[in-house]
Amino acid sequence: MFSTEFNLKRKVILACLFANAITFYNFTLCGVYIGTLSKLFFPPESSFSEILGGVIAFSAAFITRPLGALTFGHIGDKYGRKEALTLSIILSGLPTLIISLLPTYKSIGIAAPCLLLFCRLFQGICTGGGYNGAGVFMLEHMNFRPGLISGFLSASCVVGALFATISAVIINNFPNFVHGWRIPFFLGTSIIFVSLYIKKIASETEDFISRKTIHSLPIVELTRRFPKQYISAILTGALNGLLCYTLFGFLNIYLSKYIGVQIANSLFYNIFGLLSFMISCLIFGYLYDIKSFKNQPLFISFLFTTLACWVSFFLIQKIDTNFIILGQILLGAGVGAFVGPCHAFLQKQFSPEVRYTGVASGFSLGMALSGSTTLLLMSFIIDKLHYKMAPPIVIFFITFLWFYLQNSEKNSSNTKDL
Picture (tube, rainbow, N blue to C red):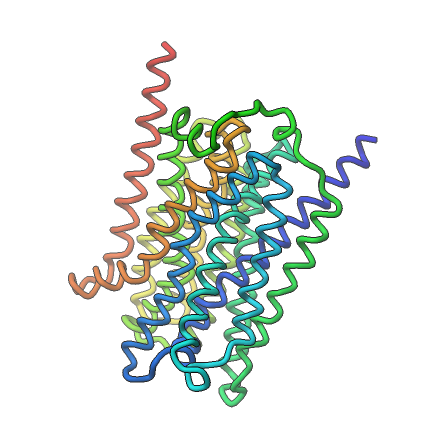
């Protein structure tokens, strides 16, 4: 009986990881194809307007992530984790399908960028409910090794981003294949079938079934009972967004604009960073569960993240293939050191009756603040200061602020207990 139940839960976990990988495959596509989408869907008056339009389309999804997190968080805390998660995943396949079939600006004019923007906004809503919802659902299903499960969930994002990047590398090598970019978007609609599979085999979590019933909206209960934890979740999401989109998005701009590397080569180099990120998520997720590291995993992550980011940008400026690859590997490892245990950390912040809303909306709000601004912020700082080492300085100060606030809150709690 126990073996059968465990095997079923394992299938649910694997299906959730696969669905999350496709979610971030879809979410990353607009980032790696930002140059192509800018040229095809925005007015061609100037290269600047094209680039700006592409950045806006890419960043738009972050704006609606908090709205999606609140919506699906409410469903998850009121009606069930399973219902919220599967609904968000099913709906996330629709905007990807529309983008794959969308006529260009040359064909339908201003309607093209408007529809693209709408798809990204809707995609953000679904991602806001699905990503953290998958974390809550998985960790409530498997109540052991939370750090490692969290690491696997974070790593699955990289699997999706990696395949999106690989598709861009392949398509960029066939410039005469005009509609080649549509194929990766169309393949992303397969997420709908994965969600239906999860809905069929998964059961509701025990934490949800045994939770206390609340008589107000989950967000009202959340802000009343867990204000400090909610702020912590927002800051965690903000730092997560800054680190991830420095690695996934800004580094390609940095290599091409400030180092002089061709975009096809920068995408290739980024693959090493993504692989390193994936491995680092698993390593630091594993360390999170070790008792001897129980009180210090976040401190270890803080030290490793800041040091790796600094060395990474230093090596990249050597403009040598080997140094650039090594820099990508170090940056990926540094980002994964923080992101890997994130879900396990957030899961402990809230009680089951408001957990979905607290984790999803707090994290997504932070991601919206940093993820939508990282590309522009980093470029702006470098251009104003004329200093190519500005990004690791920004990362250090924000990471230090996050770590300091977490420890201040922890020390305050310990003092009250005494």
